[in-house]
Length: 188
Image 1 (cartoon, one colour):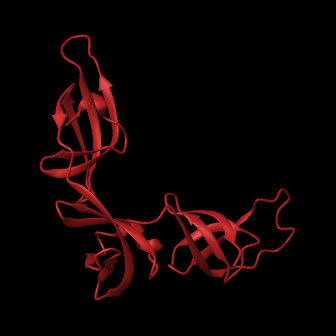
Image 2 (cartoon, rainbow, N blue to C red):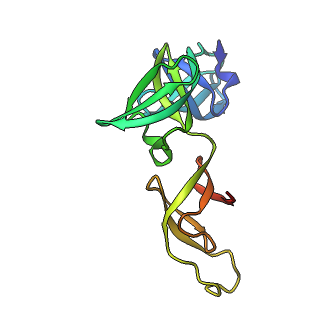
């Protein structure tokens, strides 16, 4: 059981028979009456944001969540197919279910799939990924006085991010999937 006094950002609770992730919370102790907790949370199945107020000390069950490492195989007819690395079972997701990782889908890459009560509900990309730059303008030395300038680059997944001037087409770069930012150029 999880009490409202134990809430932390990123914590998962079972609320109205669905798994929710706590995005933000605020303990309030008014001058009169009992303390309460204002909470902002996201439904992990639908992605909808919900705000609610709970009495201090109110308790919630932990959701029945499981994680599995799965390899992305292919897209077929609007469904994205993944294979469990241990059991070789395959599961399919529609575009809405994996909207957050569409910019990072690469065949044969390993992703984390979240299961709720035995059903797959969402996919999470690795924190860092190596992706090929498909298109970018050539960087010209002397374009900046201070250095540190960037230019747009289109990656093999179609995502456009800002990269340093020295990155060229065909280069493999490492990106942070949490904020879609350039980390470094990878030497191969």
